[in-house]
Image (cartoon, rainbow, N blue to C red; front, side, top):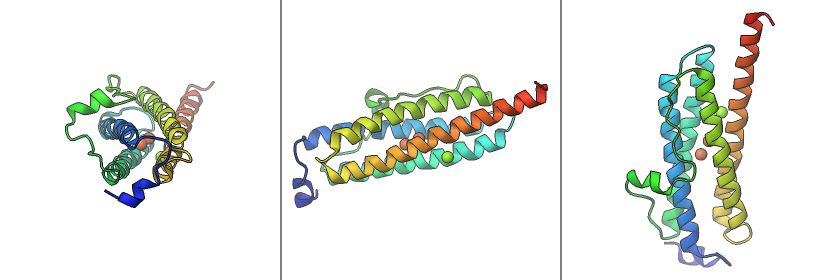
Length: 169
Ligand code: FE
Ligand code: FE
Ligand code: MG
């Protein structure tokens, strides 16, 4: 544990930071798996574009999980060790893909990103001016989640536009 490094945390409990980071850590693993499986089952129009985007997002979520695990350890905590616990501690849960159509898959993924944005905004607010290192990490992740939402919404709009053109209206 980084002793001097952690002594600079002011005005919030390190235990509480670890707890919130572990919740986000659970979210990231579930988000990773959601993208991992969506990319495999997705069907329909322009699915190649969606597959590329979903694969990229899966890699990002796994990288986020890694950033959080490193920080939890630095703070003297332990990242969640049992996947069963992901469901207990997750903020955003897991949206099982039931309809494999590309627009339904994108809708599920957008919901997940919007929840992630809310979660990281709260973490940014919680750590601002109090735990600068965690603040920096959660700010970087927040920027990625905002980009994820935008990418998915843009893709959804492109597909809807394309469907309209095909139908000739
Ligand atoms: Fe993420
Ligand atoms: Fe994301
Ligand atoms: Mg993207």
